[in-house]
Length: 418
Length: 133
Image (cartoon, each protein chain N blue to C red):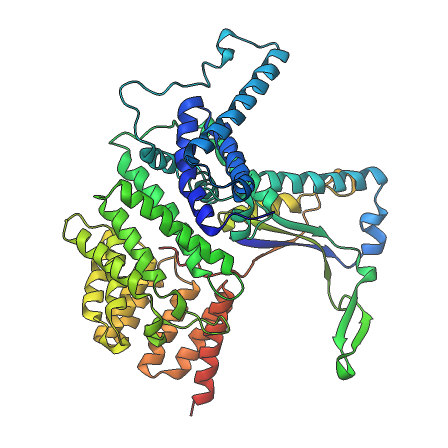
């Protein structure tokens, strides 16, 4: 059996949310429509390689999915009849929602509505992530299960629970109101950020599959940016992803070991991604109203624009982290702010800022605080203290590459100790 | 976040008071609980894997001997007070949820249906860095 080539696969993923939007509009019942679209996508993946891609692939998919929906509704109806609780409306009035009169919103908009649904705050984060990847990303359950390293049956349950939850919470297939919208958009961006992070952070060694998640997050964020070109934070998040992902090839060595930013071979960075990210963030920053993703993207841009580590514009990075710190009460930001302060004003200044974090239960005892402290002690020339903190960080991290990096760092200092 | 939940059983009294010495109905109730529990975790979309281990009588400790050949001795380590009876690996949203699941497992029914309140060791499974902002 021939497989769909990557172009065909890409086409299917692009079409998935637009087909789903059309089917939900026609039939209502998001949960069943989502299953029907998955079946249609599967049918396409099986048939198109041998029969060729149809002239109207979207129409083909909607047709197949609608047929599945009709079968499903018929079966549902028969079941209800058998259970003798047929009311007049059971002919499907509550299922088949006609398209609203007066110009149905475009199919493009459906992608956005679907994202708002799948990233609804009523869902747990793992559920929202899984549902987004399937319903909007067009990935199969098996692909998502692979990426998140759980059995397919478990992932299938997670997705079906998410759909159940949407049903019981009465989340409607419509744009959130203007009042709700900023908060709901934040939720969407957060889920896309988490998907990206999972893929990017874990794109080492054998887990190449997982780096697809980063590409998938970029693709979805690009789609949101196309739909909301004026959304500053949308552009900011897309820029942040591109500027971060640009360094992917340089951030690990041949054996999958982590290479910190200051030691990366910068010629390996993806120039095209950097240029795109810088252009995006430059355009959005000049438009006013700045958010946390834009600030982080601006910081990433400053790193990416330095062709040598020593050319990094630390004073400006410090100023941006200062802004970010005022905007979000996040200890990770405070940690990065301390690093920037150390680079500008010396390690003692950074260490002093870290002391304040010991009182924050969200980060006190976290491996990352210990790792940064170790790094700053090393910069300050205090090897003994650096070794102690590198070791303590290594003992606490839940990441294999990070543990290897921290242990090696401590060992190297021990060897060179006088 | 992925966690392994390790169920420890006391080494002392294993042969005189362990599960093999319970009345058949109590054993059945215990096994049914474990089966239902696994289904429940799967339905919640949280189960990565679960296994029960054969009793410690069959356990062997293996070390590489001369030329890397296996050198086998009876195990588990004689000084151990507990042995690993089984484990679950779960993928959950937060550490607290792993604790909840562990507490449910700990209360599995024992002899006479009395909750065992076994110690469950909860350890995070190493994974990629989560640099979530």
